[in-house]
Length: 110
Length: 123
Image 1 (tube, rainbow over the protein chains, first blue to last red):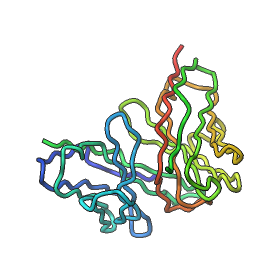
Image 2: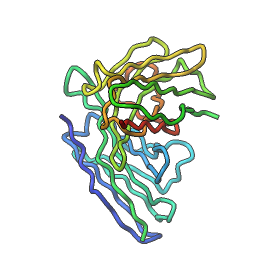
Image 3: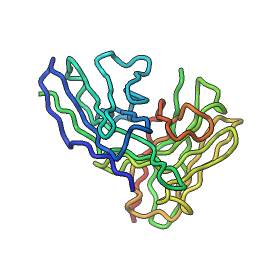
């Protein structure tokens, strides 16, 4: 089955840049989406289709996709960005498409 | 305001069933899909399946086929997800989430999420 690999944790100081990676088999034909989940809350979409931002999401959040690795970049990190971040794709390798989430990355703001 | 509002927490015994509801507000219910995602305590997100409120078409994750049923009621703009034969490892927060396309598009994101429903399975 399809596996998305994320680092368990990333730590950055306020004002610095956080980069969270998501490794897969081949992203070239798939869209990667990213979600932020603060403690005790539901996930929130922060980047979709590799690099687009929903309305209301700050420009500090951006995404990229290099083929085997997708990256969520958060510039000028704030204390409020501390959360778990998940990447997501669709696995279309079988007759039964399904959604796959990465294991999640805990962003700690030092 | 576009939102999905879910039913309250449930406590069930092993072997029982649970039905979680998800009511949509602020948009045309029949022009977007609904997926269900669960999260066990301290764990990551797990997709369970998807339903089109327009056609009733469904797609279930392999792990849940035969034990989970998803339906919608367009008259009340509500989606329902039932899990049968509950086990202790079904203890989780269950989320409904909206997909931008009403029929299955294998590139879709989840742009709006419900607040979650905690289901506890314990004897």
